[in-house]
Each structure stands twice: as structure tokens, then as C-alpha cells.
Image (cartoon, rainbow, N blue to C red; front, side, top):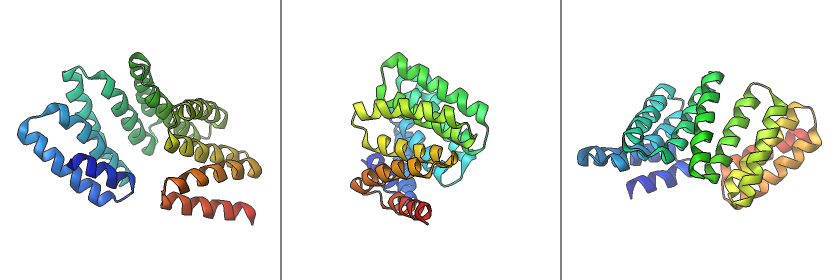
Length: 210
């Protein structure tokens, strides 16, 4: 239960509360030596640490999750952890390592038929290319991920792909297309009650209209 409370706080951007819940849940798993429960909590906690900018701690936690699930033979879950580790390396601008992790994630996701994870990792790949200003590559993988997310009704994924496609077109100085994608993203994020990113999109759209 503590883990799921942590995840709810994580999704609503209450990061301090999420971290507290994940650490409490991890402590319980460690006392019980429950490895099956420990690895996903390590990964969730690592994701929170990454958002908070504590990248060394985030890397350590994702590697711990990978080590545990490798021992357990849970390569299906390792797909997600590789993707999370990729985002740590992206934030450090270690793009080669980030790409390596995403491709490992995609390989495992395809092996296990994890379509939702494939869509998520195309999004991660798009972010890496965006940060490198490789706009054509970013657009290609984001469109692939968008197609999967739409098929699976993954509305958060769809909204994120629209948001990042907006940045692709902003980078190309195509304000009309950027505005189109950001308006689509705003509509979905509004429905999902993700207020922080809605406010950010309102600001971006206002800047375009000036």
C-alpha cells in the first residue's frame, strides 16, 4: 500500500511525500527480505530522485533494481528500469549511454510483448534526440510512440508525445504546428488534472501568440 500511495504522490508531483512513502515501503521490503517487492520500489524511488536532481542516487537505485530482477529472472520488469536509467544519463547529457539503455529496454519490451513500454521508450528516445537537436529523428520516434499510445488509450503518453512534438516544431521555427500540438497536449493534460504542465503549456502558447 505504501508503494502505491507513493506512486500516487509521484504522479501528482508531490515529490517529497512520494519519496517518504517509497522509502518507508523499501524499508519494509528490506526487513522482510522481499526481493520481488524491493526492485520496483527502488526504481520508483530512483525516478523521484532523478526529478529532484539527485542523479547519482537515482542511478544507484535503478542499478539496484536491475541487479535484483536479473537475479530473479524478471527481465520483463528490467525493461522499465533500463528506460529509467536512460533518463538519468540523458539528464547528465551522456547520450551514448542513454541510447544504449533505451535500446536494451526496447529489446526486452519487444521480447515480452510489452507494447505500453515500447510506446514509453519511443518517448524517451524522442527526448534524447530532442536534447541533441536531432529533430527529424525525434519526430520519427515520437510519432511511432504516439501511434502505440493511441492504440492502447495511454492518454498520459499521448499528451507527452504531443508536448514533445510541439518542441520539435518549435525547434524548426514552425510556430503554427508547435501551437497545434501544444493545444492538443493542453487539452489532454487538463482532462488528466495535471495542473503544473497545463500552466506551463498556457505560458508557451501565450508566448507563441505574442
